[in-house]
Image: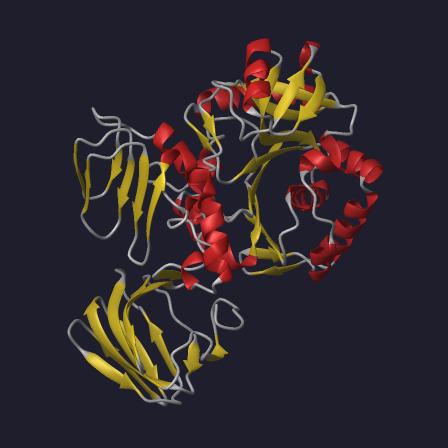
Length: 466
């Protein structure tokens, strides 16, 4: 049995401002209707002997991930919540320990959640080839057949019969060109297929400290609704990649070539490469108009964007931030995000729309002592029973039906009706209907931060101001 293990721990800062710390790229629909996570989870559809996915992720993404998996009919699945990110080797090990209880002879297919694959059928064929090696005691990595001399990827030198001769760090342009010309080198994809028991044996031989820490964390794991919370000791696990921990040191590594239109979507140029271009070479999304503009990536979310006489640039417009970059220097967006983070700017972490397990809210306006939000509550969902010490709230229903608890009262509001929640009053908002509830919330008070929430009862077992 193949157990897909989806590694969903990255932040995708090079794809700012669409990708944010609290809503990273794998949870975005960058290439179509589905998100990268959803595409990854569906990539093995049609293959026999494939188990439900295991998703390893940061706890802050758990509700979004569960909802996205539910939307594509992949729930129930196992969602392992890391108390802290410790890189891919511990993440894969936690999945291995989980699977080993019921299927110690199973195979783990480690797939980053933020990769694209334009030819899933070729990927499935490569997985089937790799499964033969894995079943016979090999730890398999997938090497991407290079299309050009790329300096942003590591390389794998392949010998006869798929033997891994060496892993090579990201080369300069001259070495990358030589690698491609030789025909002996493949890009290191970060995709792996390993036998559960063999992975644990090799990790125990090469990095017993990681294995011991993971075993302790799994021993203290517990269920929480749709999720499995890994023990808090996991935060002390050494942070290491699958490559560095095992693959570069084992004598059991095999590489299987993969030519399936793969991309790790590491930066904006990858979206330009993968996108559908117009007659001038522009990849356009949203309300964008061009005159004498060529080979640009232009994306508009909220406003009209015009581009005149420009080429080879990236323009990404969102409600609260706009990025303009030379397409050839778009890797440096990560440096910009680091600068914003150093300045304490919230735009590097959150966007104007914030997702919650019950729906989402979006800040429309904010000023001294007031804030206006647009709130959407999913059908049959409910916010926590809560109270605010520093603000009062006015609620106006725009669409749908709201059930409101205010102190000892309970009543229903429909479209164009409103109510007032005084400061210090216990309250709850619910959507009893079958369509989304949309409403406007006007907050007023001395302090309007999200941490001014005292919860008394919550369907989602949240803590703090999640």
